[in-house]
Length: 367
Image (cartoon, rainbow, N blue to C red):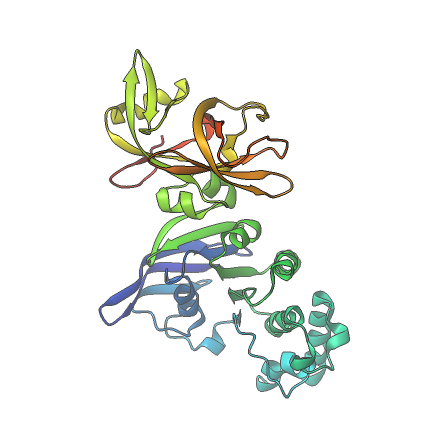
């Protein structure tokens, strides 16, 4: 069983705490992604599991074995780094076989594993080449292949795609996901790219300033962010936020955003009733701000008038940046829209997909 458990784990450098009370249970064969901005503690959390960083406090388990004091080579893990760190003077075959030779694995077994990994990754025709003769995507596959031949219980990947161009990253994402399905092994992956996290992970752990903000499936993180940070970090373009007040007028509850106000759907009014008269933060994702001329079916629209500041034609949609006297927000409009920069246009907020956060704690208000 290749389960991984972080139990009350801290990492400190002198007076600086970079990981605070991390508690996560990662299931066997799961693909867990650590995501967050630079300096949030995601790589440090991975390196503590690998044995490359000492744990200041707490316990880390691989299966039932606590590995705090186990040397990296004995943890049954394999790691792929942001820098592929291939030996330039060795062939692809020898790069992949090197770790096995150090472990004195029989030559026949090394040959089987390297050729099998080459076949899985589509690089069997490159085994005789040197790293300098390979493209960035091919070097990335060799680095992954070097991990595969170890046949570890846990794969650790620290931003392995960050050196690739945009098209190759999309391709490599799909390859790593298929690899996880094929190998049936536990994968733990670090990235700052929330698109990578959303498309690859069975669960995502969102970190900020060394503190776990939320851990859940990609869809639940998107639909039910625990706080303002998660709501803004997950999703692209980022969620729109509005400083607002909840008010009641003639029995109808509104979110008053100073420049405009929108009615709260009736089914949510009981939940938000304790916040009437209080300052809150409203969040609405750009994909839930529509052109009222081309609304998708089944939305609960609230109309907001604002000036069009910027338009970005994406082909399948138009990103429209609106400006009001006190704020700005983005919508994703149907490509048939007639919006032009400088015009005043009505946008339709889908209030069934709105989020309300407590102003003081920035936590989501929900049942």
